[in-house]
Image: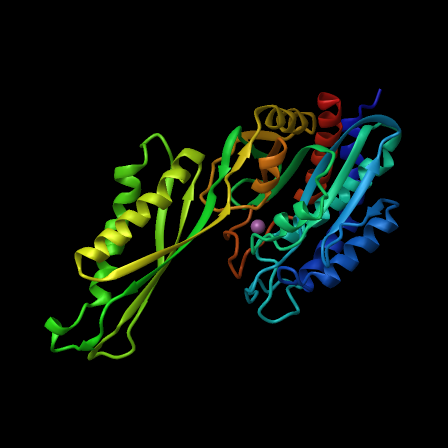
Length: 388
Ligand code: NI
């Protein structure tokens, strides 16, 4: 007897060349966050052609599709992201970006076509499904605003679990990285305004130099993690922008620092803003200056639910894939916002590239498309069974 796992694998393989041509079309015409209008039209057309039902996502870009099983059961979601980056492609590929300054340099074209494949497989097996699978093609992941818009639009209502992936250049095709617990970091952003008193470079006694104050603040911030966060947690504070002055012989009035804080644990994340405020204001006061911290909480950590991670492991094994323990990264993903509401699992899909995400020569091995399509169809079936 042929199992559904084997059927998914064979059908995905037969869809592969079609999925590759879709991926290449998306790759040629990349669109930035919240501008994915043509991408949205293409996804809608391809899903419609495959017979998959579209729902109204209620957003200008992005697509929500649904496969309703013949049998009652819970609803789960598969999620892909669809946006590209302001990067000028240098791969030299025959299907390279035709839009100067824009590129699918993070492989979201790959995520999109893989989930179209999964939707088609599930649609063709709707008779065997116990429940409903929603397939979300989320806009604006790169700007970390798409998931929030999707949540506000209500697309997650009635959904019990969610699965998603990111391609991983370091892992070979046929290998998936799966992990319980944190996989990607929380993302917060800070801006520090420093107010001193400008004046002549040769008359330091008459000024409060914001350049010296900002340097002292940058140095002091280096102890936030090492002296305030438990060594059992993971956290990083990076000051990425330091702006002050416009001349070599004039001390400016003000300076601005900007940066980001990344953590895996909510406990570590909670400590940092208050401590940073104390350090920033205290150091500035010590120099007779004033400083103001502006803190923006952006994303929680991607945190994989143990039961959902187990479903992904079983799906990967059923599909004959090599499963390795996923190595976490301090990058962020707005998939985390869904996981705040419902259990989910986000995995690494091996795509065997030579360059990292966001690089102008980023590439991936398209053989992973059919593999991903079959894997997520399988995960959906197992998810419905185990939740229902
Ligand atoms: Ni990405």
